[in-house]
Figure (cartoon, rainbow, N blue to C red):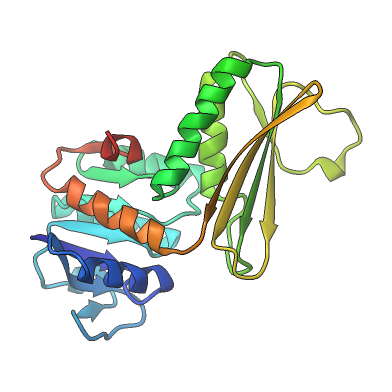
Length: 249
């Protein structure tokens, strides 16, 4: 039985993860961390340093501001961590990479298997279409999401760039200039509204034809299932960075 320490336990995603874990017989949540303490099935503390229970892995669905504490705890307790929080800046991503030399870290911009399949399909499309198609990415999320563009949109753009021969620039703001689109850019566009869980669309626009790849998340549960699967997978792993590609092999 895999013992999970859940950061962000009383948040929206934390509650969904609780439900997913409760339905499985290969793991259990033994403690949580949240600025809102309390809860029924397990104790919830305000900081990681207060946790008394012994765990096998951490799932983090909290806030980028807590990264320092999370990585320090993971390294000092030799505890694998599944980082599912989004909105990290470049410096924080370097922190994660550095910490992975001393502790096992599962880090991906999206816990959905479908999104990771979409990234692989995008790579295949680029390998076939080459540089003859303009590429645009549209992401849509609920009106409470803070970061834009989404980490998933950037992950998809990075996946596309891995297959292109020339370096590409990400274009977020065309309204501030008046000039033709260049071949060396990928447009990334954000939509925020209502209760949209998450939608991502990759457009390949060529001469007289358009190819579109898309993924639509209908509930937050797909991300929770992915995070719990990752937590079980990470038990016993050596230090290093892991992502969904290892999980789905």
